[in-house]
Length: 105
Image (tube, rainbow, N blue to C red; front, side, top):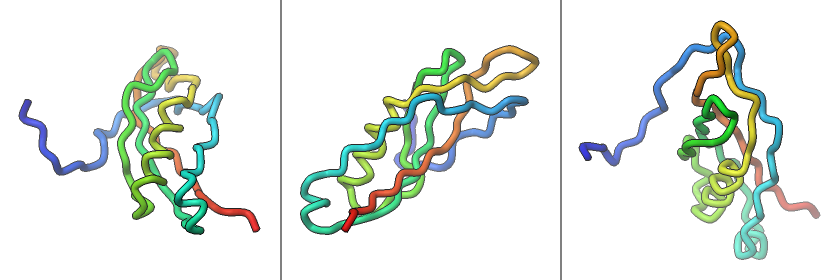
């Protein structure tokens, strides 16, 4: 399909009103990462459709741990949003969300 394996940031789309996350479930902490004491931060890009649902999720900043990255991306698919708007009309846009994986003592 002509897609490159090299991923850059999604195309910027202007919006007068930015999307607002209305439901953001916590990612499941991967059991092996938890047992190993692994922590990290992950940032994902999320494409929010005009109806507030998620159409695409892409990894933006990796934690360096694949299982943490996958857990964050999985949680991002379950988020819900009030959509972005231009001239009062709902539009689809990319936004970013960060997830921190921290073990409690």
